[in-house]
Amino acid sequence: MDESRFLIIGAYGQLGKALQAKYPKAKAVDRDNFDMTDWEMLSKYDWSGVDVILNAAAYTNVDGAETPEGREAAWKINATGPGYLSKLASEHNITLVHVSSEYVFDGTKSPHTEDEPVTPLGVYAQTKAAGDIAVSITPKYYILRTSWLIGDGPNFVRTMMSLAGKNISPKVVADQVGRLTFTHTLVEAIDNLLQKKADYGIYDISNDGEPANWADITRTIFKELGHDDLTVTDTTTEEYFADKPGVAPRPKQSAMNLSKIKATGLALRDWREDLQQYIKAEQAKPKE
Image (cartoon, rainbow, N blue to C red; front, side, top):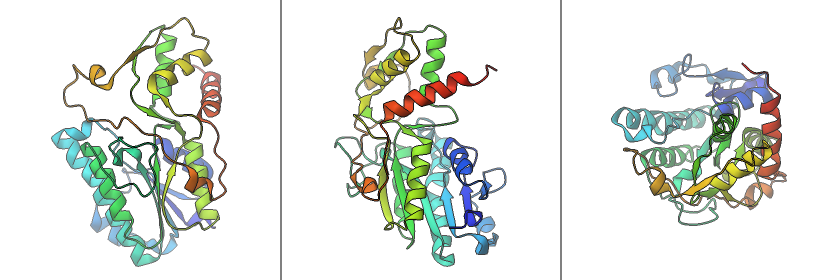
């Protein structure tokens, strides 16, 4: 495949950066020079040089989506924009790769499978489910539903590493269970589907390994950092957000069945292994 004919949308995010590293010859755009919610702009864009759209753009402020301004932005970016891309992909015979979330499920089943009916809870979740439906209308599409993304940008692991650096013993939610997904794992899954011309459709993707809750993941991070002196106190989602108004509901079960993506020949590493490597890489960075 000719990566110079790839268009990466959402180039500045964690996934966008990882996709650019994988496909350095691809055209990479973000909201400052490419507004995928603007139909007039999109309809005038020259699509003749594009074979694959990699849509890594998303409104991901889960709680912000519960506000009037956030609700509008989330629907535009997560649903309307992908709908436009789906229409253009159909018209120009383009393969559309779209990244979704396990938030499309209410988290009452485990593990989630590709054919589980969507049951979104909050506004963000509803917009992601709507985006999935819009994308699935185009003939050539891959939807990758992922969870708990960790890469080059603000994320849970970096937050907990920062707390450890300040010798803070945190309270962490222990009733949400899932697996981390490192951006390189997601990029490898995308590349695997494209290179092998796998069947179009929805694929669940995260790192492999035994699912864990956020509190236990934090303990793993602290142990890796040599901060066994810090205590992680378990709390429930309800307790954690009790004094925080306007919070979106979270699915309690986020682990996904990975058998479909594995059947394409993709080998998935345990999230603990990649977490170890990620922390080492973060520690090796020069202090700002």
